[in-house]
Length: 162
Image (tube, rainbow, N blue to C red):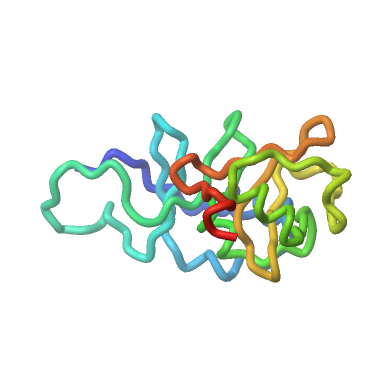
C-alpha cells in the first residue's frame, strides 16, 4: 500500500513551473522524475521509479524517493536541502560567506544587513541559500530576517566543527 499520491503530469508541471518561476531555471532537468506527495504532511518526494504502476508487493510505505519540497498554503513550494541541490537558480538566492554559513548551519536566522550578495525579486516566497556555488537549502524573508529551515536533526554546532 502506498500512502502518497503520485502527482499527475498536470500537477507535476504546475509545481515545476511554479518553482521555475521562483528561481528561473530549466525544468527539463526534473521532467524525467516521478513526484509524489504525502497528503498529511504536504511533503513532496522525487523518484526515478513510479511505484503506482509497480507490481511489487510491498508493505505499507509512507514515502518513496528523496524528500524534495514542502507545499505551504496549497501554493508556495519550499525546496528541501536536497531539492535545492537539484536546481541552479538564476534569481531569488542569497550567497553566504563563511561567517554567515556558521550561523546558517547552526540553525540561526540571518539578517539582511549581514548578507552581501542577495538576488531577490520580491515575488518568490523562498530564496535558495548558496555557499561557494553549492546550494545548501532555503530561507524565507520576513521583516528583514531570513527564516532558517534547517531541521534540528541536521544542524551543526559550529564551535565543534569550525
